[in-house]
Length: 190
Image 1 (spheres, one colour):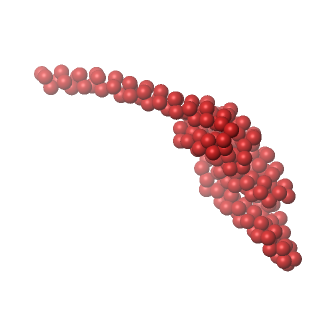
Image 2: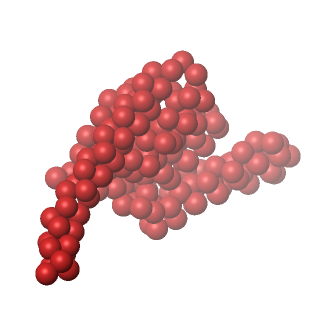
Image 3: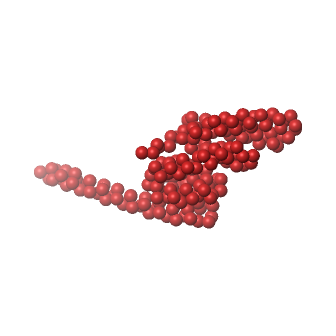
């Protein structure tokens, strides 16, 4: 009889304890996300980078950070932008996907600039899109073609520094194409 009462007590109280533990965990997650969102306002790039990186670990629970991450994507430095793209991809909510969709055309357009760093960082950023970056394949292929051609021309003219830059661009674009084909999928809008 005592054993039966004990079992009933366990099966009645245990779910309540688990429910309470889940609520506490949710509250802790909400608090951590709020604190990280506040750090995104920091003028220090390092704090923004670290906060965005940590928000990625909270996935969809970090959806409240999407507007601030969008702002960083528009105004941040290249390393911060690349990290933010990765964070938005891991958040994966419709809001986050919308921000990524809005940013991709600008990155694709940057592939046509003559500035080496802008091209390189844009290629790297597109790599973080994973399979969602498939819209960039024609421009990435064109970038490879142009960079390979320029590499040969600069090498013939003994402009090895410029030839090396073109080789880097072509290799980065090839790697990014691989990332697109084997990378993580971004959830489609619901």
